Amino acid sequence: MNENAVQTATRNNGDTGEMLRGVTLTPRVDILENENELLLIADMPGVKHADVDVRYENEELTLHGRRACTVPDSGFDRQEIQNGDYFRSFRISEKIDAEQIWADMKLGVLTLHLPKSEKAKPRKISVKAG
Image (cartoon, rainbow, N blue to C red):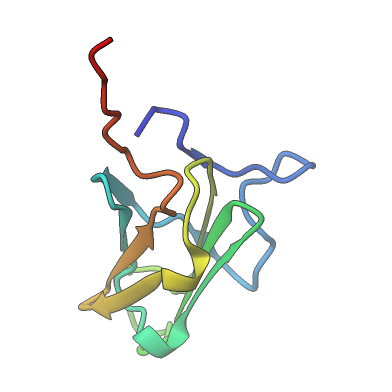
């Protein structure tokens, strides 16, 4: 993957995310590539699979996860875990087969498989003697 194949998408007004209720957190993401797919791994601790929304449209991939408040906010001497929404979007320049995208969520880690379209996959060019 060239370094520009996946870029953090930016809205026209310069924002990298949507305005969501409360705190908006940016999940940390690793992106790997092989000849068949892009693999995106996002940390979203505290998010259940039912609270994840992944969309791919017009070469833009959007991740949104909602972490519900499980503990009341009162009574803490110190609270470092924030409740809120995770949001991140990327512009994907690789040609992706949108119909074959799939994802799973385990222990707060979202793994997203973005298969390359046949046109985007590398192919061997035969050379004839001449």
